[in-house]
Length: 366
Image 1: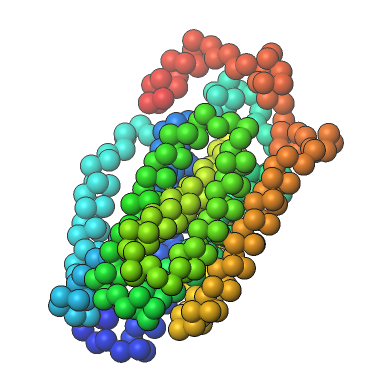
Image 2: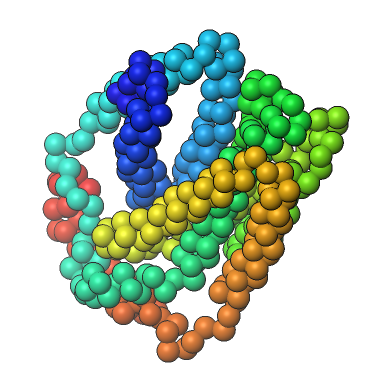
């Protein structure tokens, strides 16, 4: 609806109001996309789901810039918003069709875990205490730090790049859109590679993520450091592809670390809260990056200074990730998230379900 309004009545006030509404609606979509990936999948399927969601969200944003440039260059502003409005309606129709196809069983009821089936007590910690325990997760701390830093860099680079390409390199809108498509290709390849490698990295996951976060800041600086990119476009394409790859190698691990942190949490409210914190930091980092990039969009020297500062901060943040991940753990807090005994710590707790129980729950659809 808002896109249709923007197409029919284009003005600064209309665009500002519609963007505000779109931002609020998009926050819900972004939030629940990752949360559903955690809740609906497990193991390697969850890794694939998180990788796909991360890739789709960011690639759609980058490719949208290219498609928007093509439409704007060919037919003008009204067609851009009109096209997006039509695509949004089609998307909703397809989504409703998919939801209609997913028919719940008439005997469906909330899934019980194995301890409920065996009649054994679950962890009885209060919701607030469980949330505080979850907040102590090192994986969560690393995921939040990574996502915020990568969002800041991403926001600034993608805000400054169109102005820089226009003013410094003399590129037309369509050429600028092609630059973003190169970023998308690098991101896709890196995200897929991360998803494939994640299960094999194990204790080296933080080291892997920290390395590429440091590389992201350096490559972001290189994108703006060479003034003669317009005379050697293959060199520019390599720099942009590397930037997209580094972005994928930082954003995707941040999403996967979030999934690792909350995968075994029983309380849905705790998962919601932690996922909300992660998404808030992503949106806040992106907003800061877009703000700084927009303020310096016309100033090439200041752009170099900003990206140089980002390179330094990314190195510091990478060091922070390593410190958080490998700092010696306090013995008294080693089991902070397991107030109730588990199967791993007490094999005698392995649930046993009687034949009568199995028959009872089998008749309920389990």
